[in-house]
Amino acid sequence: MYSKIEDLSIELWLEIFTYLKIRHQFNTFFNLNKRLNQILLSYQPHITLKNNDEDTQYILKYVSPYLIHRENVTGLRLENTNKVDLINNAKLLYFPRVAILFLHRLHITKDFLNLFQQNSTYLRYLNISSIVSGDKIMIHQLLEIILSLSNLQTLHLGLRMSMSPIQLRISSKSPIKNLKLIGLNENFFIDRLIILLQYLPYLQSLHIITNQINFISTKNTDNISCTNSISSFTLNIHEFIVSFVQFTNFILRIIPYVQELKIICRSPVQNFDYLNHREWIMFIQSLSNLKKITLDISRSNDIDEQIWNKKCQMLIKLMIKNHIILQIVK
Image 1 (cartoon, rainbow, N blue to C red):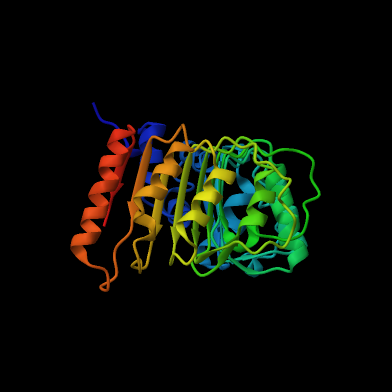
Image 2: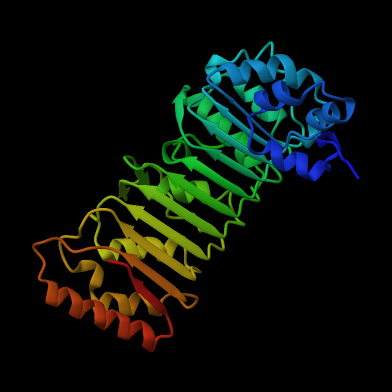
């Protein structure tokens, strides 16, 4: 019994298409027969538009205008949005059921905000890796829109954008459960984080990548109580300048119900402050839910290796005694 390649199942065709850019899919298979045309125009789950390159121009001219089921596009990646005519292509860029959205080298304009709003109703995952341009008001408006999304579960966001000092003008609470704030060379401000967390009562996981922690207050947040239920917290910091006591006070105030705590220091520590046995005793006694700690830290060459190892062993024994898993990576 003979069979033709055109008779392959839809599942096999979709598997084949995962290895090809959309432009190559259409150049190779479009107009071979009606069935293939229907598959190509009905099943395009992920679309990437960047830099107004040849692939982007092809999609906007030959693919997007003819898509049969635009609701089947669930993943969208946009890069360098300033190079795409967002006004004239607004209808071509409308995908009502996008659940996963990546934004890279973002230029925030009114046209972009309109585009974002029309495609964000069903968003569950949003990753804004970098912002190239956009005034403070526009960036603030984008943050308000993000925190107003009713289905968003996971957000990866630039630290600078999340640290907006302007008061948000929204009354709703965000359903976000996983938040990652990224700013390798930027400081994060405790008071601004406290304000942001007011809108995230369902947050379960918080991951911050930063240069330094800044305890200088620009707003009075002493009377603001954190009502979140964050159970997992990761801090990836360039260097510890704040004392261990300052750091633990921050944890006890902001994340009192933490179960998994991970501390990553990208530079060697200069003293034994973060291995202080007595301070760790007081700290873990104040965190009744704490179950696991990961310390990804290394000593500077000025610190005696034997003393360092001895303090690490004392910490391990302390955690075992309190039924806490401790992993010291370096």
